[in-house]
Amino acid sequence: MSLVGPTSIGKTNLSLFLSKKFKSDIISCDSQQFYKEINICNSKINKIFLKQINHHFINICSIYKPYYNIYLFKKKVIFFLKKYFLKKNIIIMVGGSMLYEKIISNNLFIVKYLNNYNKNNKKKYLKYIKKKDIITYNKLDKNNLKRIIKYYNIIKFNKKKISFLFKKKQKNKFNVIKIGLYNKKKIINLNINNIVNSMLKNNLINEIKNIFLNKKKKYLNCIGYKDLSTFFKKKNSLINVINNIKFKIKKYSKRQIT
Image 1 (cartoon, one colour):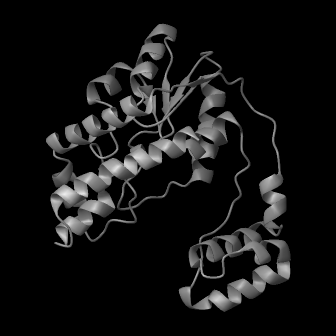
Image 2 (spheres, rainbow, N blue to C red):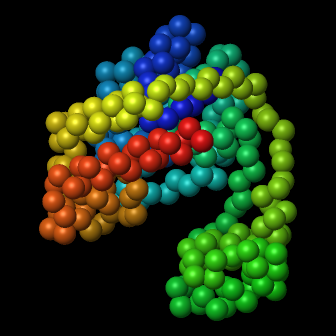
């Protein structure tokens, strides 16, 4: 059973209710909840509920050594579910990362690739893509280095064209019931404002600051990190930062609906 819908809609509360009703576990497909060190900016579920109900794929890695990617997530979840369904019939899946949800519920094909690159080899990568996959090359933004590197590695690792890999369909491994949650835009935006205000009261600024000051951290994409970083660098005011955070979450919420 997969719960989908925009941020702040109430997916977590519903997952707890359904889990108790069906005596089932919960899988988190929120990629930001993988990290042990983050608890506030990703709205991680209360520790009390974590003890009461079995939650999986929460606190499984560190921001200082993030090893999880979408391919590994799918592999681990499928392995876990095969064992889980030998004992129970229902599991609840919930989270904010829509692609992570879809790779399980829709069994999307995820390509394997090694993230090896040298920023100075852009011409080499483009030449290789052009030689192996001219259709992808013609569509590719030649200034998007990140995309160029990704496509280069995908083609090189899989020895197949991008178009072939992304069109590949697979049968679903499980029977999935999707429950979509929605509300009026006004209410969603009000909920988002309340959530951000609650995060601030719960020391969001200190949590982000501790991460920001630690040089060992890897790339982080949790709510408020980029915006608060500008505040710590004295490039922006706190009021502007808070307004930006709320605006971006509302924008992200709109994308989740569409």
